[in-house]
Image (cartoon, rainbow, N blue to C red; front, side):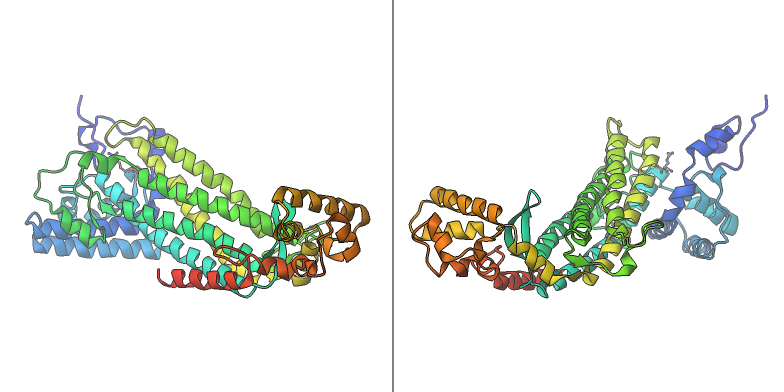
Length: 465
Ligand code: ARG
């Protein structure tokens, strides 16, 4: 029987029949990995330059490859590039087109390289760019958050535990708590970037290559800190993608918490803030509705991002060294995570500076709900009462307030003295909202001057990035 070669395949040499058409579609990745085309070309240019420098390619061949790849990039940019499922993935599509354009020299590009180290390089280049864009959107959100905080150091709202009124806090203090979460997210993102920024190029299929490749040279040309150490590990592990997704899961978790607060604060019952109409939508049946869709959607997006993290962890689990086709499944979850993170950050970075606090509503809410009860207890402690006894006395006063509908600050002196004889006129200084927040005057406390200083430090940290 004569050997029936499938000539369209770059690896067709040892095959006796064409690939089953379903298998072709099933194993192809070009529909999604073409997103890494620019990185693939950048990697190829660095590889070709290095091959020339070490004498594997001639200067003329290098020039041909450079011209050809420039044309390919041009075709991709203007949309005329013909992507083909038969060519399986982004790497072979580009290489095949290069050979079509420049002839035999195109076939030399893959010398000393495998798609295994190629794809490991492409994903890192892609993710590194994505990380830099994410870092800048995150910075924009943090700037907006800190700026709003700095403008609201003296805006008083109820602080909550168990979503029950606890103690009055500065609205700026609350916003700076958000910023702390985001600051740690930024740190995790940078850790991930630093660990992944190594070049797998030169690992070839799994064992290295017989050509005298200069891995340090390609690493430097591509902006990597250094080449990876071990060829088997270089082509196999996707831990950097998992690490990125775990950063993303935590970031989205934080954004979902902020979203939840925005949803609560915009409800008619709370009415603490106003979100501009452009971030909200209406109801098709209830004319009065203005729904906080943007924060609700961000809150919902955490589901897919958490899912992608679990997908990648499960994908990697139990894979033997070195490269396995399983790893082709890393891209869609990773890409969707990048897209989702960028969209959610953009939504928040646009929305947060537009938040209008309803200062009076927040104040009223802080005033009712006995938010200064702890301050009264502390006052009694200063009079010599043990804290547990003071707690008991104030508990009784609150119970009286619940019965009569009076807040502590609204009870007259005689009434308060009924709970403890030592109480004097100066008690009203600690029962006011301003007195309560100003008294928490230490690092990390909610006193307006502490919040202002914290906002300054947060801004300085942001600017020194
Ligand atoms: N499309 C493949 C991937 O995404 C590229 C590497 C394929 N290598 C191989 N030997 N089949 O992982």
